[in-house]
Amino acid sequence: MSMTTYRTAPSPTQQGWPSGVRYIIGNEGCERFSYYGMSAILYIYVVALQGSQDFATSVVHLFISGVYAFPMIGAVISDRLLGKYNTILWFSLIYCSGHFVLSMTEGSIAGLYTGLALIALGAGGIKPCVSAHVGDQFGKSNWYLITKVYQVFYFIINFGSFFATLLIPLTEKYFGWRVAFAIPGILMFIATVVFWMGRNEFVHVPAKPGGSLGLLDAISSILLFMSIGSLTVTAHQPVSVMLSVSLACIMLGLLVFQIRQNRVRDDGFLAVSIAGVSDRFRGLLFRVAQWGLIFQTAGSSGSSGPRVQAVKYRSTLRQQFDPEAVEGTLAVLRIMSIFLFVSVFWALFDQHGSSWIRQAELMNRHLGGVELLASQIQSLNPILVMLLIPLLAKPLAGFKPLFKMSLGMAMGSVAFVSVALIQHQLDAGVQLHVGWQLLPYTLMTIAEVLVSVTGLEFAYTQAPKRMKSTVMGFWLLSVAFGNILVALTARFGHLPLVQFFWVFAGLMALAAMLFSLRAYFYVPRDYPQA
Image 1 (tube, rainbow, N blue to C red):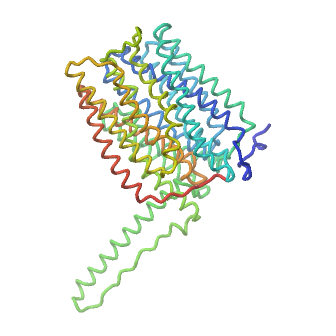
Image 2 (image 1 turned 90 degrees about the horizontal axis):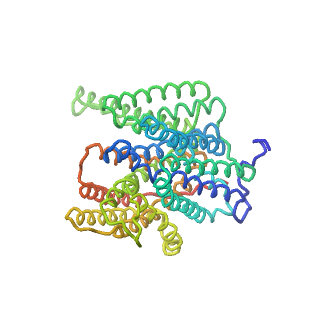
């Protein structure tokens, strides 16, 4: 079957579940096993490789920030050049190659960086596309299933994560690093095959504009994004290097964008945003010039002389672009103002793969005559998610998404208060069983269900039709910023764990308050695909 015969829009009359959803869910389960299996042993592998816990924390969180920053690259390639299906398929192969490199270069720091870079690019490239692609399968008649599909989607993520975090550390213990890194790679290949099998069942929303214009769009957008995204690579470099790389990306991005505009004028997010900034700047100059004229006239003619009346500057943005394009861009900017505060939550959440492992290493891990590995304790998170999603679904059904997210962020702060109190006891010489970590894991998992599951649904439903993947990319970018924050904090080095935990508990409480204030003024609007 050729690409031109694929369905490009969901049926507006279909009532039940779309047939392609099962392939997306199967793909996601295998892919998440792949990612979380590798992540479960990454921290202890880097410690073994370099002997520094602070270095390992920095590497892990910079890697995670890359995984969640590169979705912007996948998003623009998907929306502008290749479409979601092709983007997922090709980036999945890059993903597989990263696992292969990690497996084959045991003990090599160059192999570590290369493998992680490929995995970050592959995983990041498919992330916004998969979550948007599953939403694309639904039309107006089965739109009511959107909330449920994202609950199922999140359940399968944690199903794969649970078995990966439980089994891969054991694999490393008995078979070594090479086999432990190879198995996630095999699961990623299976995920790619499962996704390919569903190609004839999917709705394939085409990229716009595609072709050479789409290529220029992708290049310019990626370069401009890398002015920020380059921080995932240059975070360990001097500030002058970080700024130079960012500035070079901005200049090259604007150059390519101007070449594209000279060929055919675009009305996408980037074009409208740049025009909007320019429009605001012209408005500011207009007001400055007019007030200067008023003061000059008043000074030269005296108090009884003629006065110049102020004329209101009239924006030309809506005359330059289609009203739908302007509204779509404004919608994305409103959504981004919501996502900004979620970054601090992800700074807390992803620490169960780094600082919480460090705490577990200090605790009694014996259970039923078996000593658990510190890296296995994080398997509590996915099993708790699978238990809590169905338990919390009905009690929370009547609450608005942003209220649930506000509550979840506050819960995240409480989770870090509890983990800080545990660390106080450990620092005082009290021997605690690792079972005490069940409390912060439970609190953080409730927070995750409230923030992450709800956020996926919110990001898709609030995104304009042409920008579904782009908005998903911004949602995932909030995760990247959170992990960059942790990585930069780790650079200061030797901050006692208990202080580390209290700092993030305070940051989360502040972010939750600011998020709640912004959410109060946000006016939601749904954009179904068809």
